[in-house]
Image (tube, rainbow, N blue to C red):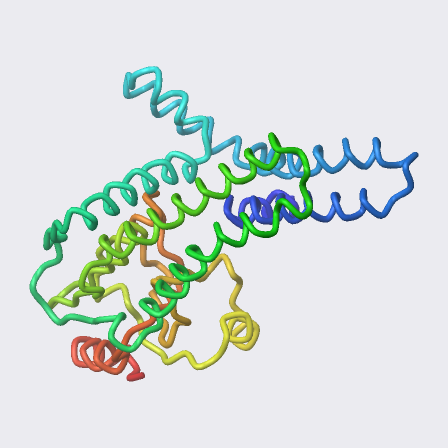
Length: 302
């Protein structure tokens, strides 16, 4: 049961990273192993990532069965039944991918982002953050990627067909990354959350969107530590936290009431907010001051 709980707490993105790491580790071990063991290590290296993903899928089988029953009860079309069996993160990733490509197209066309947030106190996160700097670094790195491939790959790969395949894959990866970066920047727009008299509207482009009632916030605290250190110091499990930032390290945390049940859209998947929601804000004291005025008995200034 502990393994099942651990698999459920591990996100699909984290598990995919572990699977890729296992594949790379198996490749290194295979290269160093004697020739007699290489066939066995080859099959084991391919099987290990698949076993990890299969174990994660089995751990979530009860939820998938419940989604399938709900789709059947609602007389949903056949493709909805297929989607119900998939991890929710997978359809969400496809939707996020489509939105980012559309955002890239609209940014290239110069179309402005429609204003969907209500009027209220703007809690910005781009003015003092490093998101725009990181975006520029990504652009420079991507522009250097293709010339580096062209100059260096032919020194190691002599097969012209294999070289062509690698160049095509590299160009596609660069194009995809550029599209995602441009699309993400278009969706982020002015880069702000908005606080009204009763709610906090969270918005980080197409990645995060949702409305959090102020009544659900027990307090606001500053964060000046790395998240693993903060979790260890406060005895908080990783599954009880959520980071809502475009790039920067969080500098404040919303501590929600234990009975708060608030859902937001995270990477295009409906997700229940955990008790601790970490934010990066240009002016975290502004949020803390407003929450303190609204709920002076439960809020703490940053």
